[in-house]
Image 1 (cartoon, one colour):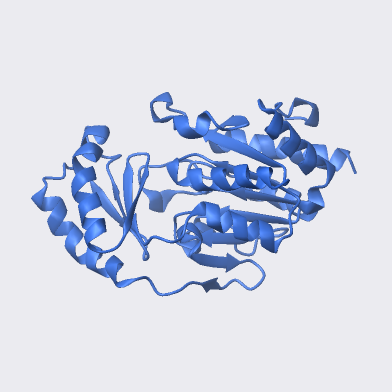
Image 2 (cartoon, helix red, strand yellow):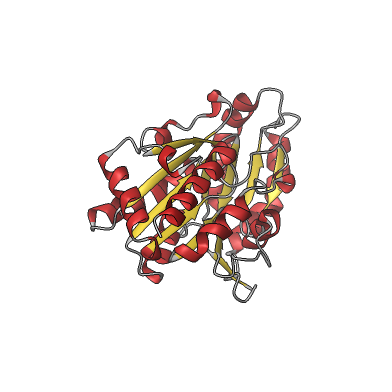
Length: 286
């Protein structure tokens, strides 16, 4: 994708966001979700890996920008490992905000900083297996332990949408009993502590970097708070650009993101191509 072929954002606000990013990249922040955005969605989240072009293109962009952040529901250490970010040349200033911003990893020192998870997480961890048996969770349903959260996936079930619908009420009730919230996603329900979300994490990062423009890319419902933050920043005079990483399966399209996005790309491959075009545009303008 050449600079000339960078797609025109479909909204006036998006066009202003892209123009500001291109005009003063040293005052701009780029932020991304991980799964479905930088990394393809896979049946086993432990097998997820960043698109092979992700690290090279981010390293190419980083010297031009105020900051780059990966904001994910995963533990920060997992995103770092699966993304191939640790020790990546050119990404010495990268920040990974895991567990929806409750955890932070900075490439500069390679350490993860995070508070202890609340006791409700341990209680849910203990009760969840019995609950899934009691409600007859179908074969293929499985639980991902994220340390600060537990995610119940139905992607491997014979009827994933039906399985998710059957689990919704009991999982919401379990979370409520232990002071947790449920974060819905594509064929997953995640039980996690309240108080952290991608919107707050993005807002803090933008303030930290004194950014004059921001772009955010995501693919699922957990990214809506970050979309809200970009919208609020626009209202405060900070230009912003919203990108939607659309899944390959049209059945999994998240309409609430697609309708608000300024630019839609085709999954991680489309996003890395867009970033490559942006890098070429910034290089050509210098």
